[in-house]
Image (tube, rainbow, N blue to C red; front, side, top):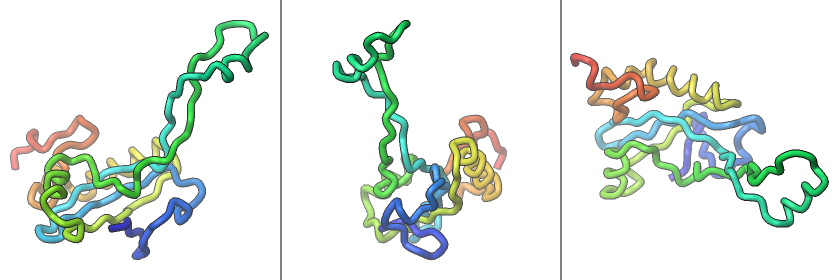
Length: 149
């Protein structure tokens, strides 16, 4: 099951525009039509301890020498199925053919990614529609349990 964006299957990172930082997605359980909306980055910044060879390149530099460097790595976006526990439990018991993975919006920065996710969660009224969405909070600030539904 690949991701679908603008009615096209996305199989490789090269199919995204060059400035894409991440995307907003919707995973739908097709049997119940219940969905989960979230965000996923395409690359991670990983903190890696410097090797002896890396440290040697700082010889002669005045001041404190770094002990870590930042390395950019690809994320697991192809295999990603969300972070919702209920959805992940369903995935363990049902075939992946019972689910649809859609990319709703592309974002070019971390800040825009968070903005677009929050916008989508509020626009789809995920906290007010428990029969339609698995999401139970927005930004860790607004929770479904806080509503008198």
